[in-house]
Image (cartoon, rainbow over all chains, first blue to last red):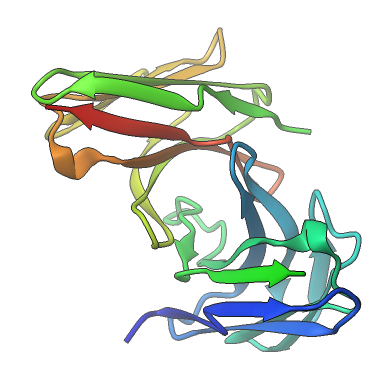
Length: 116
Length: 109
């Protein structure tokens, strides 16, 4: 089983609909992230969380919200989806910034969202 | 904030060396990374280098870091068809990791 699991893997929806993408991890990491990938733009950070009570905006948080339900769960919501939110979304985790940690991110397999 | 830039495409002949270049802007970046993304998959860490190092070698992979010019490169020796993927340069910045646009490496027979 994957250490970082995203659901759904694929979703097609219509403009104006509410969408939730879920992420769960079994790595025991404190830090979780949501990125979106667009061709030619790489990965851009949407939101990140360093523990259950900590939520931070990334580069492109407008139009998105997140919830850190537990250490192992971090969900991303689009309250009213629009076509330019069509992208591949990745959840990632990291162990933190202690002396032995390199900050390596561990990624899920991605959730492809299409907004018509 | 941090900006990481890399070219979008690279095509090499099988057996040749591939060199993927990257520049970044935040001189305080502690770690610089190379991630690999194969089709239909998430990203996986390929290698990383600590900012106080100039070079790191791991089998066919060589990472060079020029901290003065904020330039990072990844050399893949004896490139094989299995190396076809998108390679992302990334830099640590203020407790976050910022990614470049990714370089799509294609291999010619």
